[in-house]
Amino acid sequence: MAEVTNNEIVQALTEKFGGQIIGVNEPYGLLTFETTKDVIIEVLRFLKEDANTNFNFLTDITAVHYPEKKHGIAVVYHLHSMVKKIRVRVKVFIDEHHPTIPTATVLWNSANWMERETYDFFGVRFEGHPDLRRILNMDELGVHPMLKQYPLEDPNRVDKKDEYFGR
Amino acid sequence: MNHNQPVYTDNDPQNELVTLNLGPTHPATHGVFQNVIQLDGERIVSGVSTIGYIHRAFEKIAEHRPFYQITPLTDRLNYCSSPINNMGWHMTVEKLLNIQMPKRVDYLRVIVMELSRIADHIICNTIIAQDTGATTTFLYLFQFREHIYEIFEEICGARLTTNIGRIGGFERDFNDIAFAKINKFLKEFPVALKEFESLLNRNRIFIDRTSGVACVTAEQGLDYGWTGPLLRSTGVDYDVRVSEPYSSYQDFDFEVPVGTSGDIYDRYLVRNEEMWQSLRLIEQGMEKLKSEQAGIFHADVPEFYLPGKEEVYNNMEALIYHFKIVMGEIDAPKAEVYHAVEGGNGELGFYLINDGGRTPYRLHFRRPSFINYQMFAPMSKGMLLSDAIINMSSMNIIAGELDA
Image (spheres, rainbow over the protein chains, first blue to last red):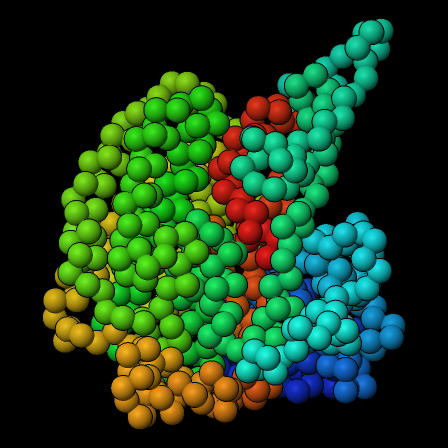
């Protein structure tokens, strides 16, 4: 089985998607790049179905909140090619006030609960998802608790201030 | 017979479906999660899984805790094999900090991780037997889980939620009693495991209940994100220990068992064979330890390794580093890292984003139980209720790992 390097993957992606592939990076050897929500499903489909890359396995979908950025929510996909023994991380930055992105359930059934979890905690609406409901939190919660504006504990409590714990 | 068709005819007076709440505290679910299923007689027509009953917001809490305080949170993910979670977390931070571990620590870690893998598989396989009605096997093998916990107790003082080791190694060296107990375990466990296998492997009732039930193809397994023994039972030889070796697994000689049909019987066999392989790994680890210099149980990284209490009280440098680590005056690189280990149920991943502070900016756990379990409701359609119950046992869904 021919190995495939990070450079070759980037080359193939740039050839196909041009300027939509940005911010290519390799932290700790794991190829990481950003793309836009318009082409994300096509990028994932290409990575999954192209014979050279063959990222057949969706390891994880999650999100990160960066309140200070213009596009404040990063949806992060981890893909894995079990055949080529290589991983890739794909990020899409979306507007935190209108957090929508197409669903990856069209490619992997495993995306279903991962996207529900991401919706539950970050409020990212995955368009076309078959059953986008909260999964771990109660339905009445009303907020998406992993967003940075929500503190861990009730801010009005005085007995649990960080300073009392050396934090 | 087409299992998806109702078995009643039009003019049957019982021509209606029954809705059954299986859980959240049903004894057959072995954990706090609910399935609302529609039954036609004994056959499941549809099901909806509801989870989150013991969600404890670990990812949120982790954003407010320094690295060394996150280890006890990982205990409570898959609490049947806490040491694997602990060490997976330690290795994630070590990867972030670029810490190279001494070989002896790697081997000690392998021994502990394989012991906990055995403990995890003991639970799953004896529970499958228990749910098919074979109580004896459960009682025979389950006592060895107790012996494993005694070893953990000797190493770190705790049994179930172990909080074992530290970033940079172990908090203390294994003592002689621990080694003696491991050796005793290595001698006694194969006998019991052999007995366990001879009670079940060719047992007519057990095979009838499990063989050909809940078959899963490799394509389905990959599509639904299965990893670990479940995926291997479908025939995919994916094991993180082999594909991306961590903690010096590349120095060891072991095999990755795979099944063929992905049914419950194959999952049982794969887990059993993995226990044998874990025993091999522990034996090799004990052998390798002999050629390593005794007394090394942590890497030489005083800026990150929390020193022992006696050191802190009696030694200036240790006191300084203790203060710096606890007060968070040590910089970790601004970076993001994904590290995966082979947990009891599959690929346990840690996605850590650090912004240079003492707490993670974001920490995400890729929990195998959570991802494996989503196939349960779709695959239960058309299954008998009693088959679905052992299907659930064979998936080894641990509520702590499911909900995080």
